[in-house]
Amino acid sequence: MAKELIKGNTAVAEAALRAGLEAYFGYPITPQTELLEHLSLRMPELGRVFVQAESELGAINMVYGAACTGKRVMTSSSSPGVSLMMEGLSYIAGTELPAVFVDVVRGGPGLGNIAPAQGDYIQIVHGGGHGDYRVLVLAPASVQEAVDLTGLAFDLAEKYRSLVCIMMDGSLGQMMEPAEIPPMQPLKTEIPDWAVRGTDGGEKRFLTSINLDPPDQERLNYRLMTRWQEIEANEVRYKGYYLDDAEFVVVGFGTAGRVSLSAVRATRDKGIKVGLLRPITLAPFPNAILNELAEKVEGFLVVEMNAGQMLEDVRLVVRGRKPVEFFGRMGGVVPFPDEVLTEIERLTAGPLTTEGHPRDRWLARMAEVLG
Amino acid sequence: MVMMDVPTKVVYERPAVLDPRVTHYCPGCTHGVAHRLVGEVLEEMGEVGNTIGVASVGCSVFAYNYFNVDFVEAAHGRAPAMATGIKRLLPERTVFTYQGDGDLASIGMGEIVGAASRGELLTVIFINNTNYGMTGGQMAPTTLPGQVTTSSPTGRDVTRQGHPIQTSELLATLEGAAYVVRRSLHNVREVRRAKKAIRTAFEVQKKGLGFSLVELLSTCPTNWGLSAAEAREWVEERMLPYFPLGDYKISPAVAELDL
Ligand SMILES: Cc1ncc(C[n+]2csc(CCOP(=O)(O)OP(=O)(O)O)c2C)c(N)n1
Ligand code: SF4
Image (cartoon, rainbow over all chains, first blue to last red; front, side, top):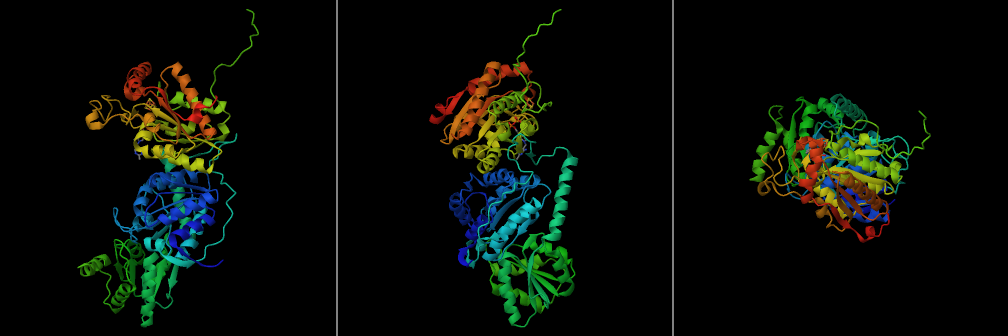
């Protein structure tokens, strides 16, 4: 199959459809809307389900119902819409259903703006809906990677009866790049045993997230967490660049990781041994490789399009063994490679410290930038 | 004494679709009656094995324990959305939601209006008992003017707390709604009429004619502070004037149904 020039949102939509998506439920919101629009045409064409819901609340609860049938289903939105979906996500997790959702993150909080951002990291990776559950979070850095992760997202969701989030940002959603979308897969024919379908005279099935008896609920929580351990053991994904001889390592995901890669290359050209660790799964987080790096490199620079959310996860692994510095742009501002390059040079020039909090030092520097 | 060999005929028994167990409903509560009517209709239509129910949040949260059909349990107010997801993927199946008035007409107003306006092929059993039963009798969108509840302790003051919502009237304005009627469960005659309406509603779904909803005026003796008998009178005296029984929407195609 040849590569085609395609927009991130459209590419993910088409990739999902070809991966056997049987029902999509969504609500328009920029910068995600092309995903919904593409499927509004393609799904009915193929005799599959597309519903523009009354709200994101409606959409995620349609996904909840649809997931109960054991078929491949998804929704997509952007930050404010994903906030509305948190209720349904928690119910889906509590019912142990597979489902995929895409968050094309934009600047916030509140209505914010429609520019690319990564401010939903804590919400998606560490929080979101109520109760004790985890979401597998995939963070692509190119249109092709978004396409590849889309098919994977459904496989993982089904393998672990889990929620999988593809967390992109506005620039990935909106940008056009050459990408190869895998060929059309046949629809799943096997319906998992737990799925509702009508008894046809057999045993009834019911799917619920209610467990009034705390010990029952605790057993469910235990099951969810042991399953998560399995996910942590098997599903960590990341990409390392120039790590072999790196003395300093930049850590960044998605677009921030991509911008950082340009900066890392430019730094390499100047003879400075810098590498990049780009987590692809934000949850489970690539702790092991980071831990390994913390033993051998001299320092880290975390780059994000937020005020240092993944930063805390990096610090948790590095545990003060090596200096960790931070650079971020917020509110829909995308960092330039030159800015990251300057930060890398600051880091490598020293002096380095493990004292204080990197966010405080970064905020002090930002005061000058913002005037 | 001579035992006569009298041929017997069963005139009344528990529908097999209802699990033979004691429900958690209070004595005198008509949730049980509504369950029974739904069960009888599904059996009479031969739909038991073909049905998926969507329970809601409210006193009927455990409805799935009582019906021997596949069931799911929705978040508060979201049953019509969840049912939409199921029905769209399993269009041959009969899908119904069972919702209280707080669930459907307050927190879930967006979802029910969305489903009705899209003409989703769902049947909604809507229990109007003028309060939030499960959480202990707070004011609902259906609470009558002046009615005392635990969150309108001096009686619902419409100037501060708004007016009760007449849900059937409201939903009947939507084109996608094919069949919207209000019935009551406070006496035998009305129970029989309610059953007919429930049958029609499920037939409307089966025949693909559009969205169908049966509002059932229901008792909540526990939170009303009344005996079972008094509660039934209260429905007649207090609820009927504000919530008149009747057919609020019969689409032309439904009108032609010969049941
Ligand atoms: C999001 C959310 N808000 C509030 C509740 C608490 N809650 C449970 S049942 C209920 C009221 C249900 O009342 P109604 O729908 O009238 O049904 P009834 O119990 O009267 O049959 C409420 C508010 C909840 N479960 N979820
Ligand atoms: S609280 Fe009211 S609605 Fe709930 S079971 Fe008791 S009587 Fe019925």
